[in-house]
Image (cartoon, one colour):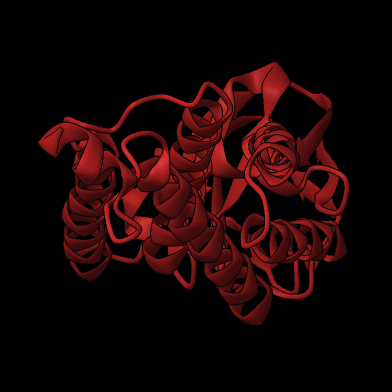
Length: 248
């Protein structure tokens, strides 16, 4: 009798799904905040704003139902991670890129947590063990540790200095200031100054060159090259940042 009274009490916490719904809501809010920050500090990225609109709609809908909004949010999180992977993955291997690294990791963690929570809501999974709370705390702990490590790495990063004879290049406004470089055959030094608040790379596939230049930092690379023309580009922004290196 006491068990029935407890279960039917209007003030009793639902035995299934409530924790996962809350976690789904917080993961969605976190994703919205991260995308807004990315657009503020990294420049306007219209496709990401589409996800913000979907997440806001999902949040509003989640206040009235669970299954429909859980499906919407699940699909949007999967698409967000898949479409952002070319930008997120290179950034996560360069913690010295400060805010860029933290925002990318936060976006990925929030998305993964959102996917797990959405699936749990759709399966009407029980949360009697507090699994949703544990997952949320683990995600927050991971972000705090990673943020501290990234800040330490960023502060400890030493900017490279250009050497005599280096080919010098500036990355600014998601563009290379010079898209046509020249150098003599043999050992070539390239110095890149990153004036943007996001990670860039100087990459030449044919020569196995892949230089990471953290946000607002400078880096230098040397490599051997035979006469010829080589395409260089920035891996995360390949469509907008590329050029040719002519070696004579």
